[in-house]
Image 1 (cartoon, each protein chain N blue to C red):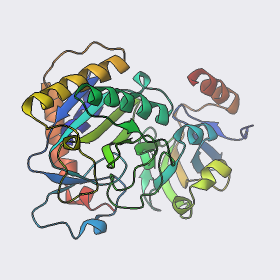
Image 2: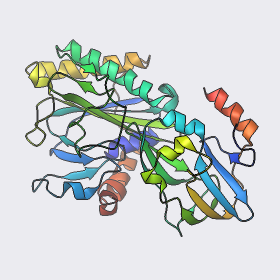
Image 3: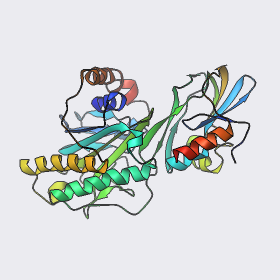
Image 4: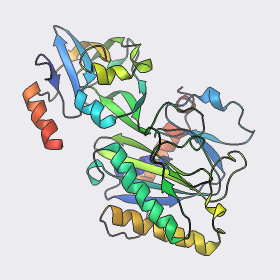
Length: 125
Length: 224
């Protein structure tokens, strides 16, 4: 069961909005399709992220994929331990495998609740 | 590399490109560390791919790239590699080269070695001699770039690789036959009918921009 206090986007990132800050990660569905994860790049504190644009990249099975920002803002913190502990993504994709925390400037992206995201995943197969 | 990047971004139809390298050069994977290549012989060009995996010395080889919508390939990454590598096994058999997809190990892991071909992973094309073909992907905005190297003659810099020349003399006729077989088998695997085309003006302009802004950019090459 995915946490119902999160929002999701079609590219399989999740976002938890609390006041004017947001925490972002990738979903269990994304992790299961990516399978063997080997490398991760996340932005440094102070970097800007923009809705619909890449905020980082991940490599699995020799495929590099961008991580797409669901909101815009300034990065407050990146999860520095994650890139050396990518198994956290399979263990707790919505918990200790958070990727970045952002000070929000724009939340106008196309976000879904957990039920709609479940339906989206089923439709994708 | 820049042309492959342009096709990923801008090709309007599924596009298979076959090419070679002049001069011969080393390409690093996107996440590799440039410090690991400080000992390359002088004069060997070094580029950084935007796809994953390890480094390849591109000597006498057939390089192939496929740029297409992600929906054309299986959603599961491993199944996508299996589809395309299966096509290459059949293409190689057509010119008398026997190989198979490695069935041992994981699909991927942090490389034990800087060289892509040094340690085959599951799904790679291998012969008794070693790894014959290495492939990698980049996926973005619903598109996929899948490219790889089929080694024709074993390079001195990477003596551990298998080569087509281990099993057949790579004459001009064999090379032409291999090109035709790769086109035929990859098109068949995707259930598409191939036809010859040329790079478009828009693709060429984008390739020139990518060459200037990315692949020739020292910041990109030295990003890690």
